[in-house]
Length: 168
Image 1 (cartoon, helix red, strand yellow):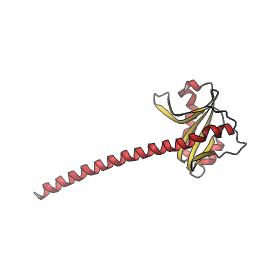
Image 2 (cartoon, helix red, strand yellow):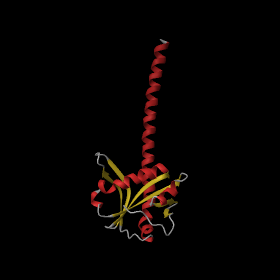
Image 3 (cartoon, one colour):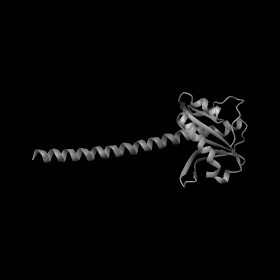
Image 4 (tube, rainbow, N blue to C red):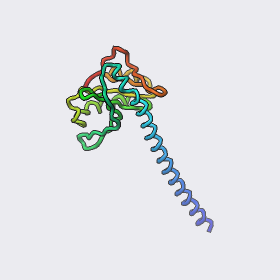
């Protein structure tokens, strides 16, 4: 009798642990998605003015645009700032890491194939971040990307005033 009661208690505990794990996963996903939206909003708020100050006459922005890869999958682009001729593709990261820079460069190399409506635009890349791992920020300028640091209630381009971004 005692073994059956213990077995039932173990099963009930197992079910409770599984339910708690599912709830934690849902909350984590909600927090991550909302945090990402907050970061994107923070960067997007000043983006038009920041890019105009760097000589790119941006007129408007689009967020979370999906492009279809050659393999049929989708990739999402956080923020696009455009003016009909030029386009700045912005990837937003809470923590900027070297691997993020490399992955974003691969996405930019494929951008015009994934979103052919921009095939005739001059494309620039930018990464926005709150904090950066060692070496990651320096990689941005070396690879021709704008470096945008989210600070408090706004954002600021970190590149030197004479920085010349790479065009795709």
